[in-house]
Image 1: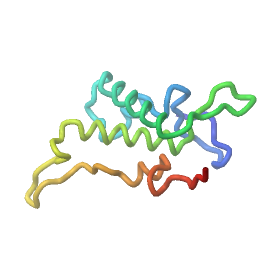
Image 2: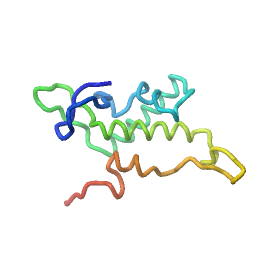
Image 3: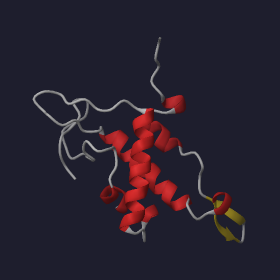
Length: 129
């Protein structure tokens, strides 16, 4: 999807989820980790992650003359990756994805790429007061 560009980014296509939240079932369905998911599964995952990210981050504010605020590309991608990881983990007991010759392979519980894109944990901006 192409649409508005953040002022701090170079011009070009960006991920745009719109005002309802930082990710959508359509964006989530494009992730390899969500392959085979039903539309209902994608809707549930996107809604849950949108609610979570809204609690973590401030809502975007429209910049005049725009009347609709869009989530930035990094937040949109981070939320979509988080939703895909949660979908992938849903049926993995204890995070075990597969057992192989070298032992179990796990789905990561904490993803530093998602934390970096969403500005969480050690990637959070410094705030005073």
